[in-house]
Length: 249
Image 1 (cartoon, rainbow, N blue to C red):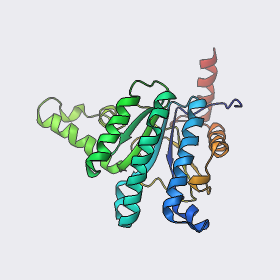
Image 2: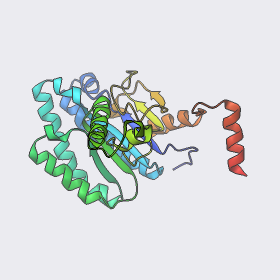
Image 3: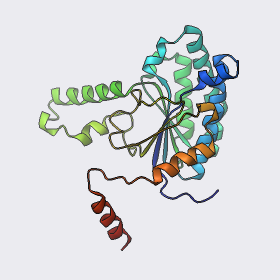
């Protein structure tokens, strides 16, 4: 694999376009989601080889429950099947899986399978694979602030103790770096309530490629685009250049 400069530590992806991919192929929507799982497998493998620290995938949002009942049933079945088939492969390839979101809405069987796979991969110290399921960025922030409010009510903290770091530490992604690069496939140009707090300074990349067709080459294209950008975090271009020069000394 060729060398790529400036690899993001954390890549977050909204995997959009499975249904449209199936429609273009004159196939059931479910086949698009099934093909999308194959794309996940390739992107996970590529991120591992590129030494990306963390890959976050938006698999099922809290708003997706509005979809047709049959599609939701198929998605839950596909989720279970993917966990069963990929678990040992993830552990064997040193990938640690973490599912974030309100898992209480899932069946007990699916919740048990999630815990089983997380336990199986917990000692992996390679790529951190975060799968957001029944997740919403606003939900994540609300849950964080509720936890903090309870701590204040108990007298452990004062309102003035609430800082950005405290909120971050109470989110589902605590301990992980914020995303450096956000990718959305399928042509839409919005974040769709994914990691809202965490993506305050994330570089955004949108592509018309439908998720089942998003492969290693497309991922490298996104990373190359990311690498060409100057991330200033509020500083001037001159300050960023000076900081880089100082770091090299």
